[in-house]
Each structure stands twice: as structure tokens, then as C-alpha cells.
Amino acid sequence: MSRAPEARTTARRTRWMHRSAAAVAVAGLASALALMTTPASAVLPDQVGVFPTWSIAGGTGAHTATATFPPSAAFAPVTVTSNATTVTGPSGVTGFLGASTAFGQDFGSTKSQPYLNVSTAAGQTNATTTLTFTGPQPDGWGFALGDIDADWVFVRAWADPGRTTPLTSEQLGFQSAGNYCTNVPRPGSCGAGPYTDQPVWVTAPETFDGVDYVPGTLRGNSLPGSPAPGLDTSGAYGWFKPTTDLAVIELLYGARSGFPIFQLWLASPAPKATITGTVELPDQSAGSPIPPDTLIQLNNQDGTPVLNAEELPVQTPVAPDGTFAIETEQRPVDDPYQLVVIPPPGYTAPPPIAVVADSAAPAPVVFELAAVPTETPAPTPPPADVDDPPAPQPADVDDPPALAESGADLRAAAWAVAVIMLGMALVAAPRLRRH
View: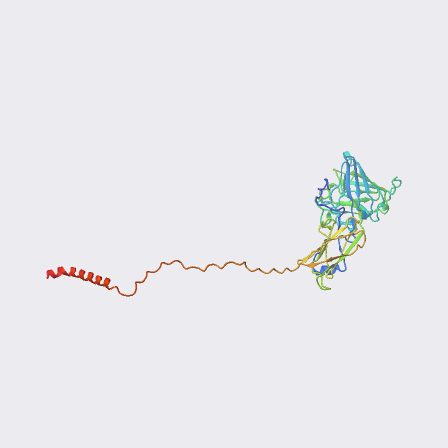
């Protein structure tokens, strides 16, 4: 059982989230062909619901709160007063009724939808929380009470503000009890299993675990010594779909042990809108198939993606003939959706288109998908003019010795012969004297 408020998510969220049982498959041609007969959904036919935002004020013993639905729900605000010690508004990120729960199968997952946590009154005495309806409710709306294990809630309702005659159990429209921790994905607030605990809707006077109960009470069913953690389990809830307009609901809340809280969700059916359109290829011949893997994404007015129950952007493939369809909740005129094309490589995304989805069949839209132009490289310009470099010069070489002029110099030759003869004579003279 949750005992503390959840941390609020910092991501911007729209006034209500769009849900689905599973993310839309983004695959090739087979998915696109299937789309030709089945529109992709942000919500499924049996999972269409909107949830209110909550504003909380006051303090211990004197809390007030207001639940405000989107205009498309045609659900007037619901005001709340409580003498509980604490009343908080968790974000629904970690504590939620998933798409596979009975409540979720009717309204869709409450993941990321705010709700109320309400405690007992001062001194662990019984607390009274009163819901006052300021206008008629749409057919098929519902509410759920969660984390009912070590505690109980006595539910009474009236069709008139004067509270003259309480509604019968049948008019309250109790649907079933279950355990939301068996959902996949499992909420992060779920403690240790097993997740088998479910509350009991009392239809005849009875005594359980030493407490006497009267009809109209949703009581916890766990006992001391039962599978851990005993009285304090996770995920036990019950839900209702009243069959008549209500003026007031009074929830008298008491503890069997410890310091418990109970959870309160409100939900309304959402009128659906089926957004259709076509993607065309203006640059290609008529009948050319749309390139595979072309996707359409559903965004909010500010360009942020609409998320499904798995917190994934809502996308759908475009069929080969260019058609697509997305089923989602209606929105008021001043809060349009935005459709964007996510093209495969080689194509340019066209501008987004705003879609006013305040009716079951908004006006179809048309996108034009163009191929990325093939760029022809510019011719390479000739190199700039450059003066011819000077011819290479041979390395400097010393001039060879000049040759003697042709012809004989007789005087020089005569002198040379004379010198030679004189030398020979000087050498030979001593030898002649010895002989």
C-alpha cells in the first residue's frame, strides 16, 4: 500500500493523456496494408476514457479539491471536501490502474493520470470525504477506490443535494474487485507480492476480522498472518459505474490497522475522433506507391508527441496508396492536434498540419512528400594563371683551362734543349775525369 505521495513528473503533460493497449507497430508493408482496413489508435474501442486534473487546497481536517474534466467529456467539475489528515494528488506515474485491469479495459490505463490519496482523520478516527457534482454526468462514467486492504470505505450517494434517499447498491453500480499489481507493466508503487489480495463489496451485514460491516462497504480482505506483508498489501481495488445522475457521494473511511490511505480515481468516456488523410507524391507519376516506412505521428498543439499507455509516441504507417487513419479522443476547437510526417531517408518532411478534432470525423488532411533534390556538383574551375617559371640553370662550373694557341714557339723550344744538354754535361764530366 502506498503511504507517501508519488514524485510528480517534470515532463509537460496535456490535460489528459491518450491511451492504448499497445504501441502501434511501426513496420513495413504488412503493417501498412493492415492499416488500409484498420485505423491506428491512440485509444482502442473499449479503452476510451478521459480523466480530470485535480486542484487541492486547505489543510489538516479541512481539505478541498476540484476535479476538472476536459470540455469534450461534457462532465461538470466535481468539488471535494474532506476532514482527513492528509489529501494529496499523486501524478499517477507509479500508481495506476493499468490497461489490463477491469477498470482499464473500460476507460484505458490511468498511468500518468492524477488521482487523490486520502487518509483517516486526526487520531486515526474515521474520515468523511464528500464529492459534490455541479452538473449531470455523462453516461458510462465511473470511479475506483484503491489500496483497500487494512481499511474500509462505506459508500453512500444521493441523486439530490438534499440527500433525501440514498441510492441503492444497484444504482451505485459496483462492477468488480481486483488487484492492479497484476497489470503488465506493473505499477512502480506495488510492494512485495503475491498480488492476490482483493477487497470485498459487502451486500449483507457481516463481521470480518472483528469489525461489523453493513451493505455498501468496500472492505479490505487481508488478514494478519496472510501472505506477506499481511494486512498491508498492494494493489487491491474496486470500481463503480453509477446508473443514474448523482448529486453527492459520501465516502466514510476507517482503518483496521496501521496508518492507511485510500486512492480515488474518476473517469469519463471520451468521444472519439477518427483523423484520416493522404500522403501524395507530386513529383512522381500517378499511382506511384508511397515509400515504405513513411509514418504519421500524432502531436499535441505545442508539438510534443501524444503518448500511448506505454509512454510511446502515437504513430501509424502510411499505406502504399498514401492513406492513413488515427483514432483518438476528441478535443475542443482551441486545442487542436498536430500531424507530422516522418519520411524515410531520401525524402523531405512536409510542414505539420493542425487538425481540429472536435467531432467524430474531422476534415481529412493532405500531405505532399517530396524527394530530396539530387545535387549536381559544380564544375571544377581551371587553376588560376601562373607565370612560367624560369628555366632551370645548370650549376656553376669553373671554366676549363684554355688551350694553348696552335703553332710552335721555337725560341722556347731551343732554350729547353739547351738547358737539358747543359745538365747532362755536368753529370757526365766527373766520370770523364776518373777515366
